[in-house]
Length: 131
Image (cartoon, rainbow, N blue to C red):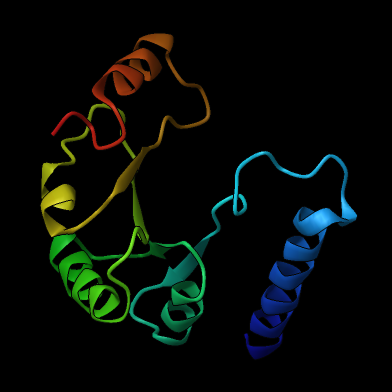
């Protein structure tokens, strides 16, 4: 796991070099495309890594209460536009509890064979499920 973490750090730095001009055309979004870093709950080293970037995507959260704990920790370090991204494995889920816990983005899962109606409903609901 430590080697994978070192490789991730190196790859993120390489990505910054590519976006900084080594790759043409450079991204239009400035100062750069946002980077959301995954962090497996309840490990804290990945949280510290994510704090150096633009957002966190916590994995294996047991629920919104755990997210609220994580958000409090993040906000103690970052009070800017740091994103907190969660996912819900079902289309049509109620994201209000996640939003109340501090999620700024809630991603909807559609499985391997998404229904068009479910995708359209999620789009219409907006980034936090319309909560």
